[in-house]
Each structure stands twice: as C-alpha cells, then as structure tokens.
Image 1 (cartoon, one colour):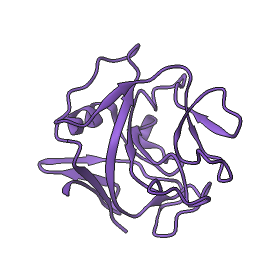
Image 2 (cartoon, one colour):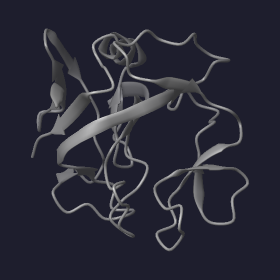
Image 3 (tube, one colour):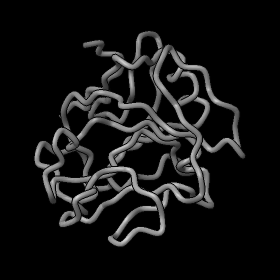
Amino acid sequence: MALDAVVTRGKRLICGPLNMRCAVGWGGITANKREGDGATPAGCWPLRGGFYRADRLKPPPTAGLPLAPLSPRDGWCDAPDDPSYNRQVRLPYGARAERLWRGDPVYDLILVLGYNDAPAVPGRGSAIFLHVARQNLAPTEGCVALAKTDLVSLLRRLSADSHLLIDL
C-alpha cells in the first residue's frame, strides 16, 4: 500500500513536498459517516481511478492512476436501497443518482476514493471523491476538494496503488 497523501484536520492535503489547502465536508471529518450528513469519512482510502471532462481539459498526467473521460450520461447512484448504491451508473437512472457532468467546474476532474465500496453498505455514504474545489475552498458535501491547479499537480504523484489518509 502506498500512502501518498494525507488530509489533516487543519484542512491541508500533504503529499511529499506538496502542502496544499483543501476543503472537506460541511459536516467536518467523521469516523461514522452516514448518507447525507455532509461529513468526510476518516480513514485510509485507496484511489480507484478517476474521470475528467475532455471538453474542458486534456487528460492530466498521472503516475499510473487510470483516468477516463466523462460523458453527459455519467452518474453516481446515491440511493441506499438500490443495488447500484455507491457505483457509477448511466443516466437517466431509475433511482436517485448524482450527475457527474456538471455545469460548474467541480467535477471537471474527479478521483474516486475507495470508501464504502467493497462491498457498499446501504446508508454509510456514497460518491466520496477528491475533486476540484468551489471558489474560496467552500465546504463540500462530504468529499475532499483542491484548487484545480493543485489537483493536477497532485495527480502527477498518484498511481493505481495510491491511498489517501483522511485524519481525524
């Protein structure tokens, strides 16, 4: 396991010589994540790969972390009672699902954290990503977010074996 990056309580993401401001969920960082609580889950999570908006940026270089282009039909199921809970789905979808193709730049670049996915436990939280931050690093719905330039810099250091430690 490669522990490549750490998110601290002080809202910093540290990865080798990189030390960047980050945003976390409006509910803080918690060891007891629940769907809809706005909290970022504490723990050590593998990076499963990611997505990028090919109409807005070129594929950013990584150290082997797989990235795929998003399409307007990509979504992420956040309905706890659905069999595809906390998984990528194609829209339109029969249950509640978050649209990954957004009008704002927040999901122009998304890294999927391996939180609650092996297997997904209904209600424990879904769609936990490392993504582009809103203006002024406003809190997220439970994800970790970085300025786009910082996220692109971080990607150069991340591989398929990388993990993100979110510290309580």
